[in-house]
Image (cartoon, rainbow, N blue to C red; front, side):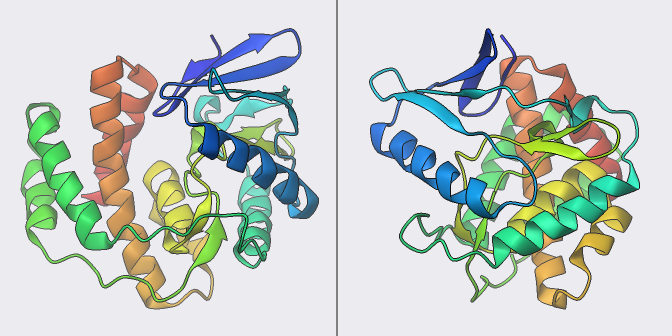
Length: 247
């Protein structure tokens, strides 16, 4: 097995990555395969090119992209930020209406879900961070974004492949939607910290940054819960690191 995430398990079969959904969804799988074809045409960095889809078993296969997941790389080279900035600008301005579904999950719903998640993981959150986590969950969530852009929507460092000089691939597009632009920045904020993401945010409006911080905090709690449920030490370490700059 190559790895296991929230929604999928991935296996290497020869030069193919075979990804199997934990809960098969014919419509979602077909949608993702069509979307990847469109993304490959506009992305400045490589994305998976689908070889075949097995709808019955929730299986999608693509040629293995070269590189190492950024989660396994000790330091983030400056080339990563430059290429991510280009990638985000390109995808967020792409016209994907009709191909991508629209995400209408509100910040209030995210906050409520995070409250439930925290109940599950509270005993595992370091004492130092508990007061700030609990204050965050008691606070009002930000207002929803009036804007929807096409976004990867799960742009964590486990989905970014690098080879030391360039990004060699961005994988796992199963959550891609027309959504709040803050989501892509939020996943990177969770994994890389504020100073790094401030460079990527550039001239984005202050409300985008505020929502990125909000979602990053929700994501960190979600990561910890996933790591504890699935026995994933990398995700657990990542979540604990994120708490140090998010709370």
